[in-house]
Length: 407
Image (cartoon, rainbow, N blue to C red; front, side, top):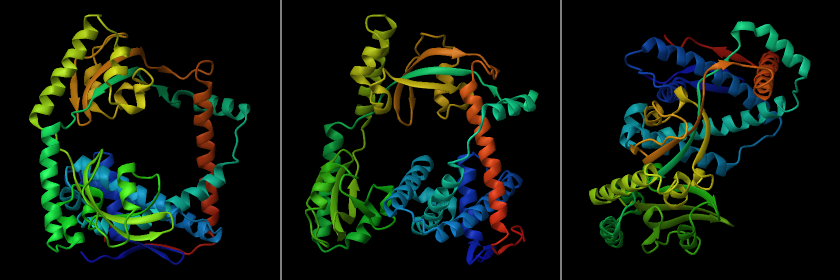
């Protein structure tokens, strides 16, 4: 199908391809099977179109108020999203197959979407920043909602000990031999950009010929930056080792303390032996904790690779048990009692042992126990109501045309 305009907002347009890409992204996040549930996907399309129109309206307002989006923030968000989809779908090729577009086109669409989204978000934040709610308003809303008030689901307070499968020396040597062969190919006059798109293990940049976009000092790992900022545009580095693997770097352009580079990455891939050693280690850790010869907290401090929780004895906080995003966590916690630990299990992040610190049963919201949560909920409702009313006022002064999306 040829691309076409599905909506016009002021002097900006919304294309069918833009709408579809965002709808596919939303379908992916909400686990909607596009082929088996076309009605649900059409609902998502309409929802996305409504949101895009609001975003375009706020974008118009942002331009009037001379609000801009930071380029580094835009590029960082693009890479983050591409990496997320690649990780979840398995490869850049799978991402292209899912969205029906090459990575380069997905990035172009994302770039403008993210830029406008960040500008629109600033407008929204400025509008709702000064909206407050009184205690009387919270009480009135609480009482008026009656039985329709949200309930607190069953909550679990958990701690996590995670051990990653780390590549050993054998994996390092395999990667070193591969990057050395790539370096030889470059020295034989191969095109850096073309070669990067063929062989680089960085899914976020390979499709763009290894190009990372502009970044400042301090944004990337030290080993990479020291070499990148020491080269002139067009020069090619020697082999550089970082926590991500081995790189070959080629700066494209430098603007003061900002630089845009291409790179080729060869990642270290753990071997079967590395996996076996990790499994053996996590079992030994479990046995020591289960036999009470050492505490869970001590083993977290010594072995856990979960940077976010390691300094907090593995504490991840409270979560609604049914809403845990890592399904393996739900399974591991199912029959645990407070104070007990799970048997080791594997996720895509590594091997885990969970400790159930506490569990709360489902209950109704209580003014005495949940005032802060009720107040936040009430404030969010008020902010959303006043924000949407303001958007309707903006619409009166902006040309908007919407076509049917199912023609």
